[in-house]
Image (cartoon, rainbow, N blue to C red):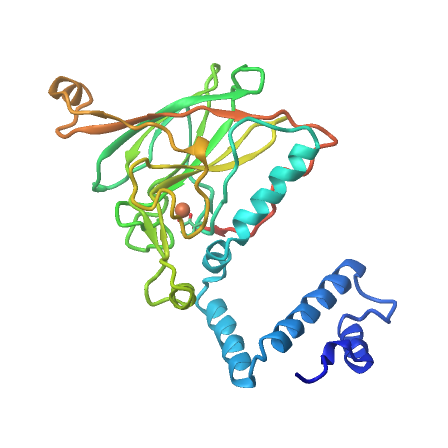
Length: 309
Ligand code: MBD
Ligand code: FE
């Protein structure tokens, strides 16, 4: 084994200069983080004896991920978005904020500006296929008091796992709505049960997953942001119970309290009463928010979103 280059003064000096550690300019935090990231990368190259061909293949890979717009898919697939959740959970716990509806990852497929309505909405547009879902519940605080005027911002996939905007075959805000809760904190909506999502099979994320022997499937789920003034914003999802990937999510986002029971109605009279001609599903799910507190860690995550034109 040759001597570790990373332990030589020459390489230490090189890495310090890379991070701008010796100059008075720039941003101190950025300098230390870049210094660490580059140093750790060099350590990986040395420890695994990464060959130049392999290194340039990784550079090409990251370039292709960016060009394909798949950075937002790669991050959750590597568990990094779930890790950020665990970090936020830990920070809250240290600030005495515990319980309430658990957070789970936002994912990369949110679009701002979905239609807003009071108390109820229908999410599926233009003869969307799928089992009809009625979902309802209440937004409450930790004392059990209803949160009136909360905004429940909902987005989910169609039965094929496709999200409007990213799937141009769907109407603009299909399966995306915002609902303002009523005086009792209640919301309800009609939609269709989503299907599970799969990473694009010919995409860059799946290409790496293949090399890890992993699939790129997410169990069927519905995303929510729940916000109200003076409350901590909640980013979460529910999973559709019974999905084969329920506890085998490429994005590691399943949490035990986020798998509500699905009630299925097959009674012809109940079906007719809803104006339907096939069995339907019902889910009741309450969102429990924490009050905002000055000393608490930041609940709102700043993140770039696409906006439907
Ligand atoms: C999704 O629907 C999703 O929620 C995540 C996190 C990644 C890919 C697709
Ligand atoms: Fe999703």
